[in-house]
Length: 243
Image 1 (cartoon, rainbow, N blue to C red):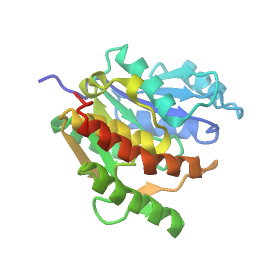
Image 2: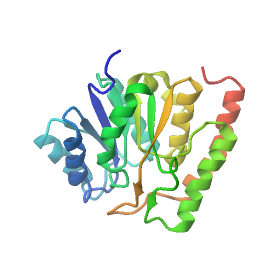
Image 3: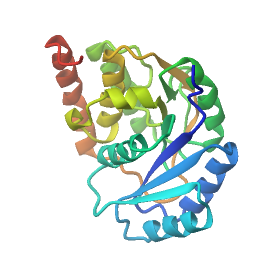
Image 4: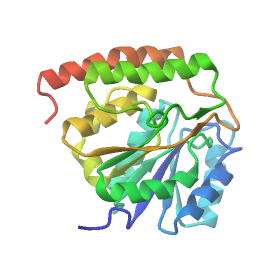
């Protein structure tokens, strides 16, 4: 079997992350000499895109994909996944650029993906491992995952988590044109697609930290979308729409 970690890529969506980008790139690249990073910037007004270009000019392991405007995290990730699949990357990560996902966990993902198709960094597999969130947001996140598990039947403790590693075969098997959601809903939908297609999903424990700089992208729209989207996913599975 080919080593899924022989050519890994981290897809790093950014919007107004100029304060975090140089440091997060440095820490990601230091974890493993094989890792490359694709910064997907949605025309950040704070100069994140320019900063990414400067980092890429200094280090060939940094790539940049510029998008014309901000249209959501899910679409940014799909653009990054398409970019990766057009090239010969063997596994593709997604993670946040704000240090809520710590680069130190990448080594654990690289080990776990050896015997899984999709690895998810879980905040809830060993208790609750979230730092500096207000109780209201923590409860919302925790019970959103309970709700998702009950409605969809997908056996994940952290279906809304956005720290993931996919073997390329998983992303190749998913029809991106059918992915309609964004934000936390996107994370559920992409994992649900993989699960319905029979891919092996493994969760590994991580600690999630509230962002160090900038502002959260959470909104009421994202929450509403997630509430209704899980029922749509269940209906599609009942109708046999996942092949």
